[in-house]
Image 1 (cartoon, one colour):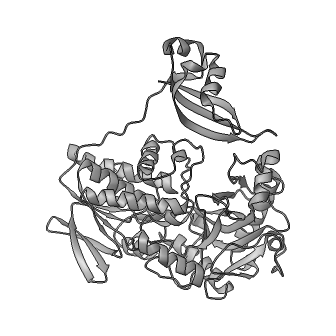
Image 2 (cartoon, helix red, strand yellow):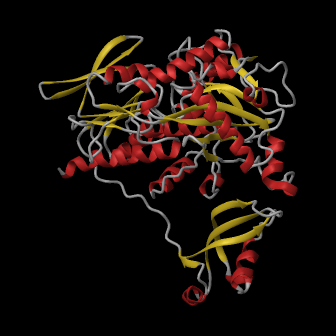
Image 3 (cartoon, helix red, strand yellow):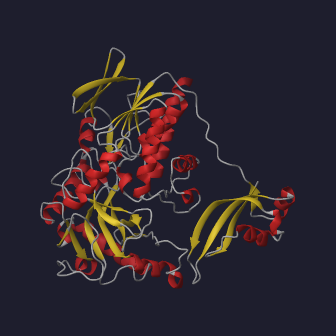
Length: 521
């Protein structure tokens, strides 16, 4: 088969054989077995169109290769599993890093036990629904903790800056377990939180069929070595127990602060840069017009995304993160007395508002010294947001134009906050240190210059977004083992080595491969 890239396709066109034949100037009947490889939107000009790549078979392929520079041989991706070891691996955390680490190990033939402090999705959905509708927080089972990790209640966004061939393995695995077909080729793929839940359940069931044991509602609280044995200590409703393993994987996620504090006494942990800010909301129809212009109402285009990044006069990065077209803002805290928010979209992306995090870079010199200084910084602004919201998980909301002026909004305009369990009008300047406010305001203005109309009199912000990434890094060696522990593997976002579903999944796969290579030693 051949691969053809960078083919312009008009909106609504689905006769891809004709498109390819016109591109190559050959008869349409010669084009067979077409497969879409990639599809992106080009909205740089007035007329929006798609740019696509295809695999196909044809007559005289060698001759076509010589005469067309945008053709190459199509080579399907294949993942080859390494041989199993005889080791029992305990994986702590069932987010993308832990889930894909366990998935690769189980398919290779290893014995795996997955420990998850939250519940399985079937129960977790009810707990999260109660949190959003009634403001009742279950500290053990929420948007931060539970099967699938924090990404389960986001957008199911599969975009990443990571350039790694294993990304194809992640996408193929999701597809094999019920993800929408278009994630296999969309340039900005997403599953949607509603469909991602079913995908993760299907992955769990397959892992169980391969012999993997899941221990939900079970918290990892300690580890130690004794008589050449490696012990993981866990707690659940039945009490405290000890599990023997050969390898321990720490795929904790970015909110396991109590676990970080325990590990800080045993592992080498260093602070790292992260970012904090707000969720911004505009009408999705406004964003569609800004991005797609005269084609904003086209039935062939979904809700428009955006991505912006600027640098302020003080040299701080301010950028959008986890943009959710047609989505809602949700409470992502895991502990009473703290408030932080995140964005979430369903597969249809059909809600009235667009939302995105607007984040300001924070560096170790900005927060208290020590390996966990970043956590103290996060907790401080989350407490302030909780207090400003009225101590009941209601979130402070403000018009951007009022935020600029350091005054509480008296009323809102066309953009109504989507956050549940409710909002209050307050001055978000009170949440942040002055340098964050200063840079956030300048960053918003620079973004509006880049994308005129991005901010208008109705645009609102909700506080506080503080969990875009972990503020720590658990140090590890080149073989991915924790320093001084050749049987412990810190992986994923919670260990400080990834950010988002895809890069975390890839780090989990790499960790599994490193564990399987222990055979070679």
